Length: 125
Image (cartoon, rainbow, N blue to C red; front, side, top):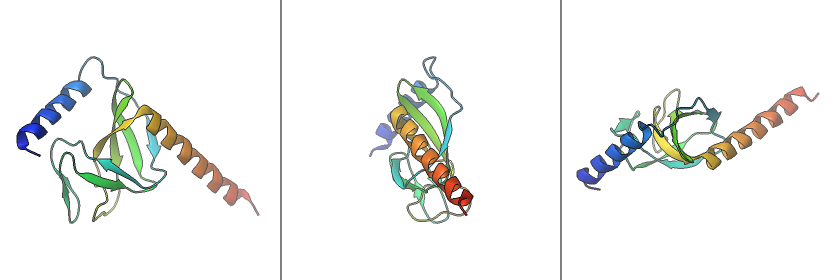
């Protein structure tokens, strides 16, 4: 992808998520299952042995934190938190990606079921 296209895409995202129509939310969930996401960070982001740029794809790790940092209509900009050391195709800490509100709510529901199941196992003799 040419640098001009990346610049225009980043400018568009910045204007959309900083506009009066953007809604800042305090919504969080945990990653319920392995998922590939397209990176929306305007600047390259790296971890131990890889660097990722806008439009690259990386993998979310189950159990890590997702925080909604902005929302426009039914689309959310989500920040991924990856504590510890990551490598390979795993998303580094601070990756931003886009997710529909429906997908975010479904992920939250699946993670709630996982936690409830774990609690039932702990409670059983």
